[in-house]
Image (tube, rainbow, N blue to C red; front, side):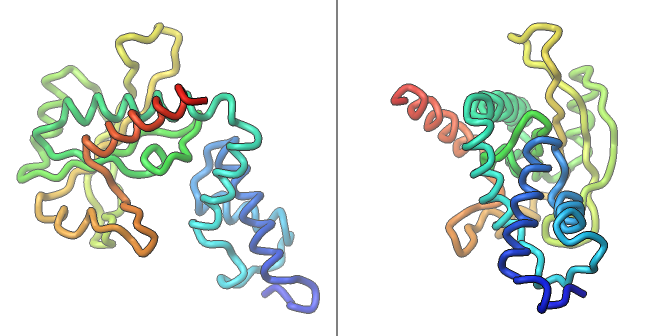
Amino acid sequence: MVRKSHFDPQRVREEIAIAAARMIAEDGLDYSTAKRKAARQVVGETRVAGEWLPDNDQIEEEIREYQSLFQGDSQPAVLRRLREAALEWMDRLASFNPYLTGAVLGGTAGGHSDVHLQAFCDNPKEVAIYLLNANIQYDVSETRHFAGRGYVETLSFLWRPANERREAEPVGIHVALYDSDDLRGAVRADARGRTARANRQAVQALLAESSATASAA
C-alpha cells in the first residue's frame, strides 16, 4: 500500500497515466499491462491501491496528448490506413452486421495497433465459412464478451491492402463473433456521448472528417 505521507495520490495517478500512455503509444502495450508497468516505474515495488491508479479514460487523454506532441506527423496517416482497412472489411462482412471498436475507432491507434471488429449475426459460424471461401487463413481465439457474459470466438488474420506494396506491413484484423441479440443496447452512448462501437456509416464519416481536416490544414 502506498503511504500517503510519501506520495500525493493525484500526482501519482498523473505520473502513472503519462508513463502508461507513452508505453501504449510507443510499444503497443495494452492498457492493463501498461498501467501495471507504469505503476512499478513510478513507485517502484510499493503496492499501489486501486484508487491511486488512473482509469482508462485518463490514460486515453494522455495518449492523445503524447501523440499530438511526438507523433503528430505520423499518427494521423497510420490511423487513416487502419480505418480504411476496417472499412474495407466491414464492406466485405456487410451481411454479418460488423461494427468497429477499440483504438482504431477511438482515434488513438498507432503503428502497433490492429483492427478490432465485432460481427453480430444469427449464425456466427458463417463468418468463418466466408473467410475460408475467400482463402483467408485465420487463427481462432476467444475474446471476453463486451458485456462480461463469458467469452466469444474471435477470428484473427493478417491482411495487406491490394493497393500497397509487398513490403508494407500487413494489418492485423480481429473479428469477434456475436449473436444478433447481443447488439441490443450495445450501441448506446455513454455519459460523455461516446459509443464503444460504430457501424460502416459512422466509420465512413470519420474518414470523411479526417480528410476535410487534412485539406483545411
